[in-house]
Length: 188
Image (cartoon, rainbow, N blue to C red; front, side, top):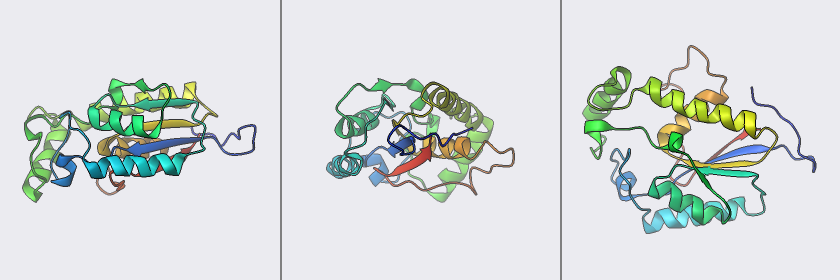
């Protein structure tokens, strides 16, 4: 599904995925979801550090969730044209939006994702919209360097997608931890 096509300079084309920088909700370990939070000063510094890390990479396309925290992160990292895509918005946390991630709330959120209750977006729907986005990137930008700025839950969906979408994939056991302002990459 993902090719290792080399660009003209002999370097593999990559998909670079950055998790937005820190917000007050991430600092407080709360479900951020669709709450349109700004970056904290630490979040701004995380984005600046990622901009330095990615300096010198030519991006053929840049995508971001339209929420403030991702938009701010992306605009610090990249100064050119950014395509804001609603498919990259964080999972809708419904009634649990803003709740502290206690063991009880984490369990309730997990159950609500499976059933799509409590106003929480179902995991199935969330993964589908993120995989639809990944299909578009892989088909439309194959062999190009692509930057995507998204959210924690999207990192999980991207990991699933680029692992080949195995039927036995367990989002709990296969979860990856990408810190705020962190980066993951995949060959493109």
